[in-house]
Amino acid sequence: MYKNKKFLAIVPARGGSKRLPRKNILNLNGKPLIAWSIEAGLKSKYIDEVMVTTDDDEIIDIAKKFGANIPFRRPGKLADDYATRPEIIRHTIKFYENEFNKKFDYIVFLQPTSPLRGAKHIDEAVEYMFRKNGDAVVSVCEVEHPIHWSGTLPEDQNMSKFLDNVIVQSRSQDLPINYRLNGAIYICDTQKFLDEGCLFLKENIFAFEMPQKISVDIDTKEDFEYAEFLKINNA
Image (cartoon, rainbow, N blue to C red; front, side, top):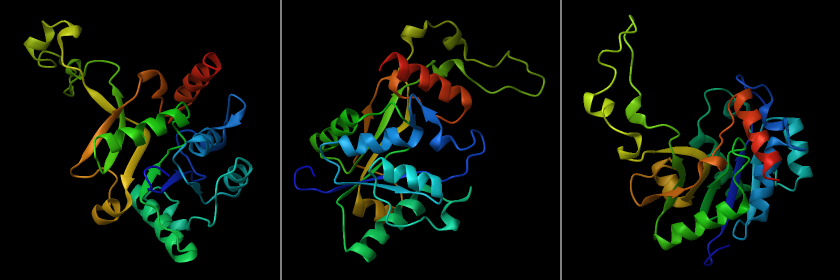
């Protein structure tokens, strides 16, 4: 709880994963990947409950072991490749209301694929949102390379029009800084989410900046190995 507002952390973790099979339970520096996000939520000063929504028995057992709440199994239609984030969140909110008569003022969405994000970052994001008087915050980091150096290629791979001449003649340090979503933290006013059906609100939403070194978002084997390297060397 923060300023008399209640926070529910939702950790989504379905069993299937095509690019990196069973990634949510892979061992990352001594713990299943999902455990890092569960523990970050539990160690937060402000989160009241940490809920794992999954369709998988093994993930359920791991989540229970690490202290998360699992009052229900996610229905199959919300565990396939077509299930959307808003559908999963709305289902969780409604379940809490209908089964436990519990309501939360804010949703904190913690993807298990961001294991370098800790309780400290969650708490700082909550405090930042209130300082901004915002309804939502989304974590971002600087892009690794200037986006101005990227472009599209025609079928013949001709690069004559790949970049603008001004960009070609510019130094990287003179280019504007760009940011990307890093997938680590989404916080949103619950009612605003229900009204708009999206964590990324149309207004009164702010960027919470995080360093690149903790902004790994695991989707591939290479991402996982890099996150493991960072965990080991920052333990």
